[in-house]
Length: 356
Image 1: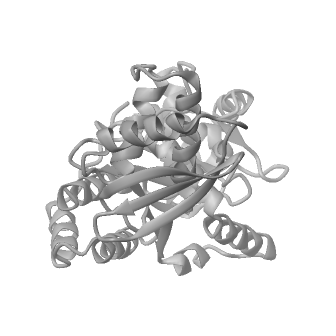
Image 2: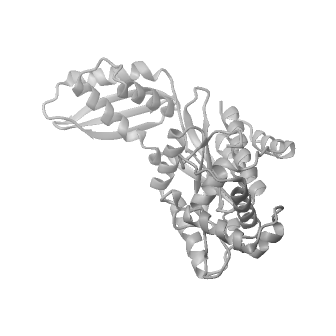
Image 3: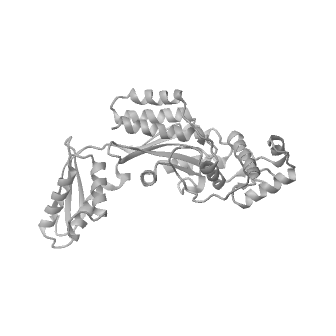
């Protein structure tokens, strides 16, 4: 891959193509990025440095179509890249992109002006990304991530317990969990003691990540009943969608290429996708699980399969390396990947540093 950043590759293998075929494919993709219109063999024969006949070019285009990289939107029309073709291009043919010094300065200045106010920093990051990319931008992040002071399990009925969470700023959260009948009170005490020992003034996100990792790796010396109580207690707060907020800027940019009722329906669908908490949770979880930045092109992600859009998404972290949110850019599948990928990556790094 030409671009030097960390991108999650969704197409595991790429079919090797000869130089002539690659040259034709790149011209079609470049033209798609520029105009969004199909390209025919006669147009390509003029643009190509090699002297190739229209018949030869049509044969190569048919081969690319058989591989799933191109398609013809109309009979006798030229070709456009498919989502699979765009993935092939982004993974292996995208020219190296470097964020300009001017863009770096704009991102840093905009975010740093907001001081230590996390919400305002994230809002500004979303706004500057939208402005620089001329696309819609999103930031998915916790509404608050207070440090945990105390957690306790209290029996309230024969088969229920109350989980009480107290943060250092005095906020109190309660959740009710199911417990086995006739469970010894000592189990709740052991679960409470274990959690309080490991919280150590961590933020809620840090605490959940640390404890769940230890439980999943079976490092904790707990009996199965205590383990089950702790797992249920954590479940009330571990779902990202319970506490995440969404910051969106530049939705109007998505309307720039609307030419039909079908286009408008796709845009309405993506707005609906972004307004659903479960969708936010899946995006942030995907970002947390993948190795760094991820690129979703069109139908590759079920959330965007009906939208005709791409999403460039990068997680941002705290000082302990825990993913606490994600930011990205959403636009048509012909967005300027070479410019937007490093822009999103750099913004995520600035956010990680400011929220340290």
